[in-house]
View 1 (cartoon, rainbow, N blue to C red):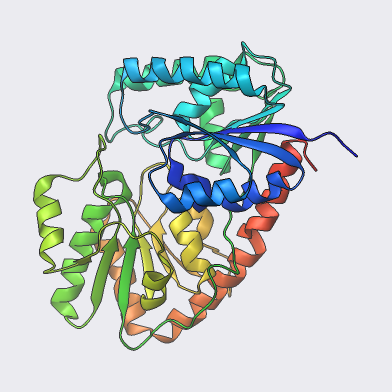
View 2 (cartoon, rainbow, N blue to C red; view 1 turned 60 degrees about the horizontal axis):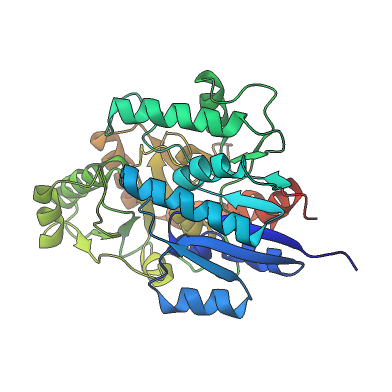
Amino acid sequence: MPTKRRILIACDSSRSLLDFRGKLIEALVESNDVAVFTPLIEQAHIRAKLDSLGVTIFENGLNGSNVSILSDLKYIVHLYRVISKYKPDVFFPYTLKPVIYGTLVANFSNISLVTPMLTGLGYNFSDGGSGNSLVKRITHTLLKVSLSSRKKLKLILQNSDDYQTLLNHKIINSKSEAFVVNGSGVDLSHYDYSVPDAKNISFLMVSRLINAKGVNEYYEAAKAIRAKFPGVKFRLIGAYDDNIDAIDKELYEKIKSGDVIEYSGHVNDVRACIKEASIIVLPSYYGEGVPRCILEAMAMGRPVITSNSVGCKETVNIHPNHVNGFLVPVKNVQALAAKMEYFIKNTADIVEFGLRGRNYAREKFDVYKVNHQMLNIMELQ
C-alpha cells in the first residue's frame, strides 16, 4: 500500500477552503494527509467540515486585502514554523500573498513539490485603477523572485491571459512550468438546474462591494433600465468589506436605500438568490481568474452578462448556437444596459441561453474535471 503523502494548503480566506476548494480537499484526503494554513476560521460549519474530513488546521492572523509589513512578517515566520513541523511533501498555496510568501518560505524547506496557484492577478498588473504603483512594483519583484528561485515548482493559473501577462512582465519565462486550469470548477450536483423566470424579470449581481467588480456600473445601468421598465427588479448580494478599493460611502448609501437595487449584504448560500434571478450580471474589470459566481449561475441555468475582460470572458461561449450570455466593454454603462434590455425584450432567450450555459459549465467547468487536472499537476493521481 502506497505511503500517504502530506499536503499543506495555504490560503488568504478561510471561507474559500470550502467554497472554492471543498471538493479538491475531499479528493485529496482520500489518499493523503491534508493540513491547511488559514486565517482564523470564524464560521463553525467550516471548522466542523474540515474536522470531519480529518484535515489538520493551522490558523494565522493574515489579512489578505491590506498591506501591513509587520503582519506579513509574522505570517512568514509562522508559516516557516508550520512547514518545519508538518513537513509537507506537496505545498499548495493559492491567492497572491500565500503564493508569494509561501513559495519564498518553501525555498528554505525540504518540500518535494510546490504548486502555487494564482486565482487571478487582481490590481497588481492593471494599467490603471486602484493600487499604489510602488506596491505594484514590490509585488512584481517578490512574485518574480518567489516563482523563479525553485526548481521543483509548478505554477497553476486560471486563464491564459494571466500566463501571457506574467510572461510579458518577465515574472516567469517560457521554460517555467505553468499550467492553466478552468477556474475553480463548479459542482453541478450542488448548483442544480432550475428554469429561470422569464416573465417577472430580475437581475442579480454577486460580488464584494469594490469598484473594480463594476458595482457602480451595475447601479447606473439598473437606474437607466428601471426608468424605462419599472417592473424589472435588480438585486445585489455581497459584503461591504475593508478593502483598498471599496466603493465610496455615497454609492453605498444609495445602494442601501433600496430605491434602485435590493441589497442583501453577504449571503452564505447563494443558490436561493440565483434561483430567484432571471439573469446574472458581473461587469468586473478586477483581473479575475474565472469568477466563481458566474460558474454557479451557469450551472443553475442562468444567462450571464459580464465584461470582456480577463477571466470573465472565459465564461461566455461565443460560438454560434452555443451563446450563453454577453460580453460588454469594461466601465460601459450604456452597453451593459443595452444587453439587459435585450433580455427584457427577448424573454425566450433567457431560458435558451441558460440551458446553453449549463451545458458549457458541464463541458468545461465541472469541478471533478478541474480537480482531475489539479491532482495530475500535483503528481497525486
